[in-house]
Image (cartoon, rainbow, N blue to C red; front, side, top):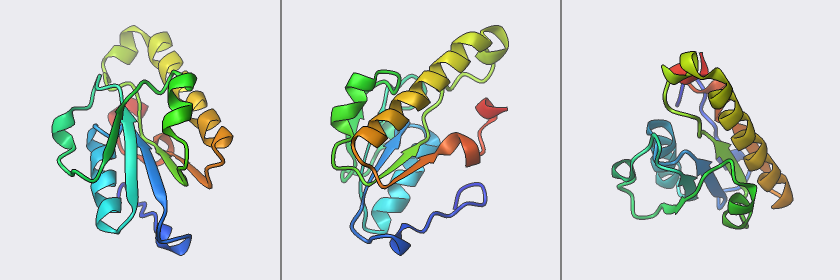
Length: 139
């Protein structure tokens, strides 16, 4: 359960492949562990600007070092994915005060790229973590 939201994917299909952006961050890594414990296949990407591989101690996670802003990088790693949880965002909360354009551009282009790759790969469900997660970078 994260910020009052618990996504029960077992209502859809029990053998889904879940792809998490920002998987090496606090939220992404915890979501990955949760869904692996429920029996789902989990993979994800992170550019490791704010996340760390130390957060990914579960060997069942397939990790890709990739930047969400690069659509051509995202399309092939999101093939055969059923559910996408987009939890990646620029991690430097204080930076948004000094460079709001950089932060907005990065987060917007990253979101559009991940959404586009999801549609092109026929993903069943796309969840934008920026809507429901509790992180100060969204404020």
